[in-house]
Image 1 (cartoon, rainbow, N blue to C red):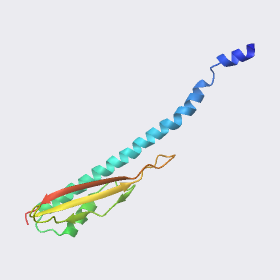
Image 2 (cartoon, one colour; image 1 turned 90 degrees about the vertical axis):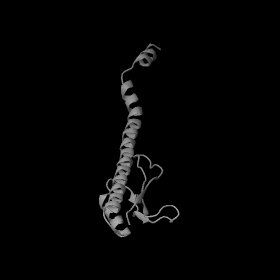
Image 3 (cartoon, rainbow, N blue to C red; image 1 turned 120 degrees about the vertical axis):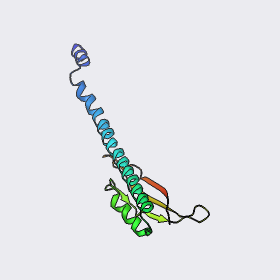
Image 4 (cartoon, rainbow, N blue to C red; image 1 turned 90 degrees about the horizontal axis):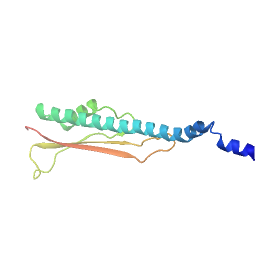
Amino acid sequence: MNRLKSLWRDVRGAAVIEMAIALPVLILFVYGIFQVGIAFQASAGMQNALGEGARYATLFPVKSDDQIRDRINERVFGTAIGTFSPPSVTTPDSSVCTKCRLLSVTFTMTPNFLFFTGPPITLTREKRVYTAN
């Protein structure tokens, strides 16, 4: 009985057990923060590319839709992990606006949280550009 009481009161090794329980959760959270950071980087890259495409369509005279798409594709960054869909350049109805174009880009990624994969994240950005032509 005395020996059982001494084992019950012994706390050596408790820190190792606590670390074994907490460490996988901590690693999961840190890796999740990196995955969210990748999504934010892709969002910033898409926004930058849209801004460059809009600037290109506005400042330079008579640009075709293909040239604007190429400019957006050249300027996008942060989309290596995932799928960056080809940008679209459309002309809205004349009732909506005259002399404008609608630029849009889409990025899809599936976050990987080491032990499991998360749901797909789809980011879509649009920008309306008014042109002189």
